[in-house]
Image 1: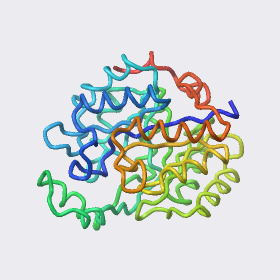
Image 2 (image 1 turned 45 degrees about the horizontal axis):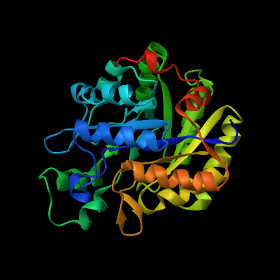
Image 3 (image 1 turned 120 degrees about the vertical axis):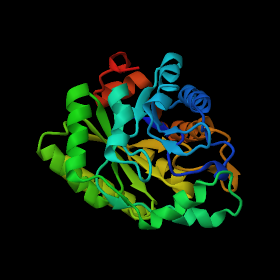
Image 4 (image 1 turned 60 degrees about the horizontal axis):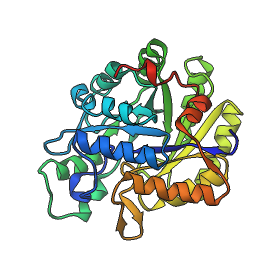
Amino acid sequence: MANKVIISVAVTGSIHTPTMSPHLPVTPDEIAEQSIAAAKAGAAIIHLHARDPKDGRPTPDPDVFMQFLPRIKQNCDAVINITTGGGANMTVDQRMAAPLVAKPEMCSLNMGSMNFGIFGLADRYKDWKHDWEEPFLRGTDNFIFRNTFGDITRILKELGETHGTRFEHECYDVGHLYTLAHFVDRGLVKPPFFVQMIFGILGGIGADMRNLMFMKETADKLFGDSYRWSVLAAGKNQMAFCTQAAMLGGNVRVGLEDSLWLGKGQLAPNNAAQVSKIRRIIEELGLEVATPAEARAMLALKGGDRVGF
C-alpha cells in the first residue's frame, strides 16, 4: 500500500454559505449527487455535514442526514465519514446526534478547542442570499470551537468503543498532535489511526510549507509508524498542500468544504472536479489512488455492512 494515496472529499461542510458559490451542495439530493460523483471520480472517503434544505444553514438533524446517507451507500462503495464537529454554536450533544444514529465507519474528531475565525469571509460579499449567513460568519470573532479532553473522551468511547467507528483526527495545530498522543497513551486511540493535518484556518497553524514539514516531523516523532496521515488546506492553498503531501507519502483531502475553487478565479463546478484534478496530479507523480477497499484495509475500518443506515 506504500504507493497508494487515499483521496478524501469534504462535500459541503459548515464554513461556506450559499451566497459564496451556486455550486455548494445544500439539499439532500445535491449532497447525495455530488458525493456519488466524487466517489466515481476517485474519492475513497466522503466526509459529510448536513444543511437545512430550506436555506442552507448547517444542521445536526439526524433526519436530514438520513435523507442522503442511505442513497450514497447504495450508489457507491466509498467510506462514509460523518462530522462530529457540526457547525458553529452547536452543542456536543447536537454534534453527536447523527453519528450515534448512523454508526458510521468513520467520523471526524477535532483534537482540541480553538478559536475558529471565518469572520473575514463576510467582508467579501455585500448581497446575501439568506439572512442567516452574514451574522453566522461575523459571529465567529467571538467563538470558541469546543473540544475539551472530556468531549474527546466521550466521543472516542460512545462512537469508537461502542460502535466501532474510527476517526479522522483533525489537527489544526501542533498542540493537537500532542493531545492525540495523550489519547494514544491512554489506549483510547489505537493504531492505525488517521491524522488529518489542517492548514490555513484563522486560529490554527498557517498555510506555510514549513509548517507542513514541522507537523509531519512532529507526528513522526510522536507516533512512529503507527499512523496514516493526510493534509487539507483552506482556499487557494488546497491543491499545493495536497500535492506536497502526496509527494511526501501522505494522503489528501479536497472538496467544497475546504475550498470553493478549482483554480485561480475559477469556482469549482462540483466536488468531483476537485477530486479529478488531485487524482490527475497524484497519477502524474507516479502514485496510485487508493480504492475504498484499500482505504478500509489501510485504516482498519469495520466495513460498510456494519453501519446504521
